[in-house]
Image (tube, rainbow, N blue to C red; front, side):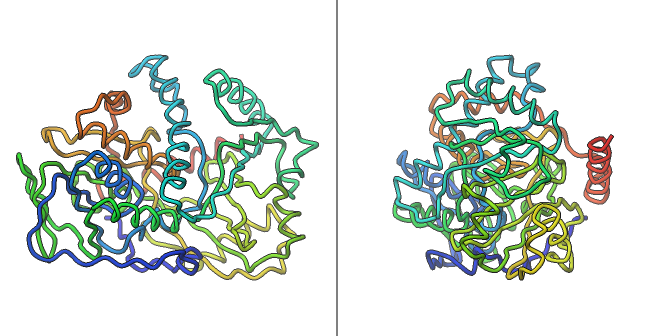
Length: 431
């Protein structure tokens, strides 16, 4: 069985929070129209969307707001939901695939609007570049650019030819790229804390250190914690990689995988400019991808890897530093100030899982963002809130039409089996 640690190393984000928020532990009995489990982006934004539609909401978080992936991810805000969307044409049709792509654009816009509406200070910066490891990646970028433009993508897209790569990244390991001024990067913890404050201002009751221990289903759902209970007409489960054993049906279709980040000491302005001249977020195309960007105080935040053991490496910096130096050899003299990791939720087909629990008319869920959760969580929240309030939701119907297989092997063997599958994908990259 996977063993998730409750002792993640402190992140750079936790050392630079813009707000200091604290919410009480649930004590006694409470009631609401909707109970939301999970204080990350999914739960916070579902609560906001529902409160804006006039429903009363209680949110329960087992630790602190954004304790999991929402508060410790790479901070990359990138268009799109899912991977290889054409694979779903048999389930949703060609127009359904195009709608998935349009929703991937809409997802970023939701974040943009949320930040503006509530004046959230989260270092939101526009500009992103996909990096080609091989010439075929660059050809795929050309096709993707044409596809996005056919959808009416409203932001600048530009193919970066091999001889112009140093205009976006000070490295010689890439053979091209595609820049996108409609994607970018931000301080994810400050975004989540700003959204928690926004939810509270809308009347949402938030409770921290209130781990759910049991759910009683029925026309009214009763959610139990160690200190109290919540009775609600609807329930939303937004725990993703940190679901644990709360619901075995949901946990069987998503597997937690560790991803890790290091943050350097602050770089000089000249060095930072040399490494990432346009202050973009960047990401390569390998299975065990590298992703990186500059923070507001000019640190290089460099992330990647993908572990399925449920345990963090003993020395994250020792593991990640060689990856950073492969891209930026000139940083050999730079100190690593922070090292941390967290769990992302991965589904077998890499499409977010958004739907209603089978046999439960009033229990909804969203999970399995496969490393692209900053935007996809916000889209999922809107889709869930539309479904709960009875609004016509093209998104809910579309996502519900895609089946999601449970990982084979049960709790004991599904992680090793997935690790073998990922190893095979890595082997194919080099042949």
